[in-house]
Image (cartoon, rainbow, N blue to C red; front, side, top):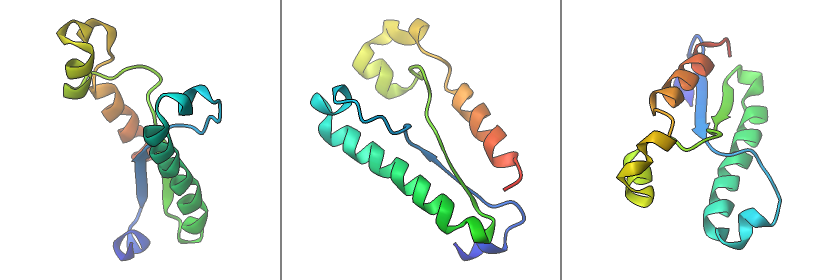
Length: 101
């Protein structure tokens, strides 16, 4: 944090979903949803906490499945055609961290 406070364009970027309290997200995935939502709430809290220090805090969450070793393991090798390239997340992250904090 001290380095961010003295940085020229400091950012914290997290990978966490928008908060959606619909029961369907909790029913079958309670532990996963709870931890991901906890990360989302940390983003909201840190964004406010670090605002006076001009440290931007944001989150990224893809709207579709991103190609990764995990998606190929769980969805199978044929899932590649159904997934977005992982570079789309990298491109989005680049856009966010190059904006003025």
